[in-house]
Image 1 (cartoon, helix red, strand yellow):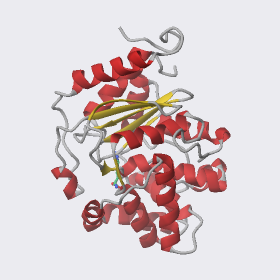
Image 2 (cartoon, rainbow, N blue to C red):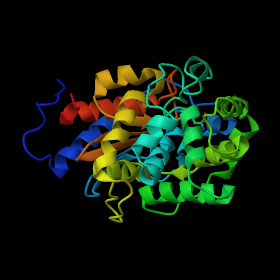
Image 3 (tube, rainbow, N blue to C red):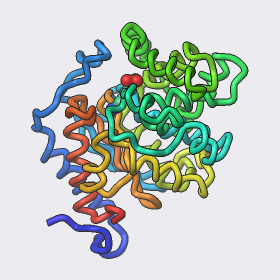
Length: 319
Ligand code: DON
């Protein structure tokens, strides 16, 4: 059976135990055929659906991996907590709460209705509206400056130079009507803090950054390590601000499936339509997964099963 908080494996988890549970999760869910690639960004439909990778990265940077580790997939919404982190680092967590909001919407990630229901907030930095608002909050004196700050921050979390997947960017921009509507609505409500088209471009480019499974594990491990990247030892977020960010991930990281996710895994996490998920065990490690087929809420099916399995077996759910 599964272990829950308070029943964690006695003492420190050994390297063998980490590797064993990662291998088990890979073997157990590799054959799962449920879900489908995102196709509202046309090019994502062409990513091979059978790819599946897991990387568990500890707060001191040790990597326990199984499956696909090379393929560079688009980060998509998994970028959102990291740009929220940038805003927190620049302006403090209170700025996010005041200028964006921290309530989960209970609605799909691209909801326009959420903005109409709650025009006083935009609504949290992990849905499209709040993430476009976060990009617009970056202190910048030009579009290039705004982009460089967003891009450099994500590269700092991954601890290496990353490329933008230009085809993904072009593909999403060719069908970006919904997010354009969101940017315009936000602007109309005084909840966007830069030009709507500029914010939309920088946001979409942010979502098109290519990362592999291991990169995502290292990004998450930085949050597990109180905001210090375990590879470069660079402090990217104040230790005091990490809990606020993880709290938003806990309540909104899985969109309208966040309650179900928290109920089952007990971990703050973030998913993206490129097939990535990262979950954080504060003070210990992060689990990153990559697998393109998504469920109805837009969350990677193999990924969420694998993370639930690993968290359950290691007994690291927070509750
Ligand atoms: O804005 C979008 O729709 C995409 N660039 C990102 C959405 C996303 O990843 C939602 N995740 N489940």
